[in-house]
Length: 268
Image (cartoon, rainbow, N blue to C red; front, side, top):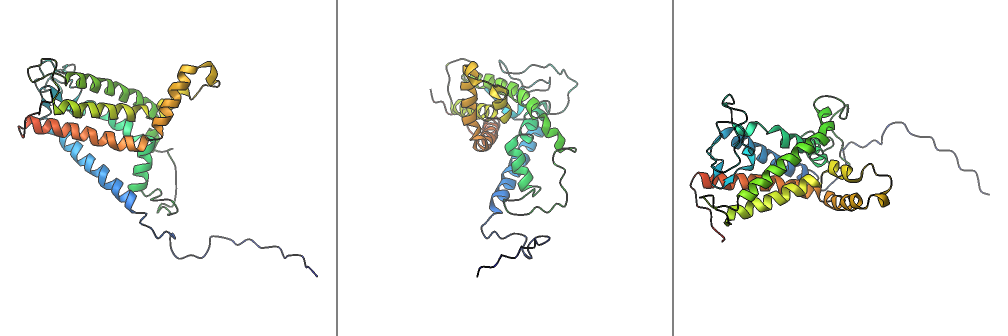
C-alpha cells in the first residue's frame, strides 16, 4: 500500500564543501593573460606618453600624440600640429587628450569585465567565488564614473576622426608630396579601421542607432545601422584587443623611424 511521502525539510546555509569551487580546469589562465596584456600596454603607453620625444617621423605622427596642441610639439611641417595650448604647457603633449580615449576604454563594457575579473577578482571566473565580502556595484567612486561611458564615446569618436586625418596624411612622402604609400601607411590604415570598428561596436553606439526606437519599420535607415552595429558588437572583445595592439604597434613603428632604426619601406 502506497504511503504519502514525507515532506522535505529545507537545509539552512550552503552545502558542506570545503573547497571554494569545484572547477578542475585552468580557469585562472584567462584572467592571468588579461592582467599580462593590459599591464604590458599600460607600461608601454605610460613610457611613451611621458617620453615627449620620437613621436613624429614625416609623414607619420604617433596616435598617442595626436592631436598635438602644445607649442612644445615636434616640428610637424604640414602635419597635425595646432598650438592651441600655447607655450604654458610644459609637459608631454600626449597628456592633453590622454584622458579621453583612456576614459572610453576604462568605462567600456568589455574592459569592465576584463579588469573586474583579472585585477579585482570580481569574480575571477564563472563558478569561482570572489574574495570580497561586500558588493556595492557601480554606485561609489571611482566605479560610478563608468556611467559616463556614453559621453566618452562621443570624445572617442572625435579622436577617431583626427586619427583618420592622420592616416590620410600618411599617403605623403617625407617631402610632403602626395601619392606615397609606405609600410607605415599600411600600418596606419589597419589601425584606423580597427579603431573605428572598436568605437562603432560600442554598446553606446548601438543604443544611439536604435535603442529608443519603438517601431523599426518607421526608421529603416536607423534599423539597418542598428543591425550592422549589433553585428560588430558581437565582436567587441576581439576588436578591443586588436585596436589596442594596433595603437601600440603604430606608435612603436613611428618611434623606430624617429630613432633611425630603419627607413620606411616604400610600397609605391
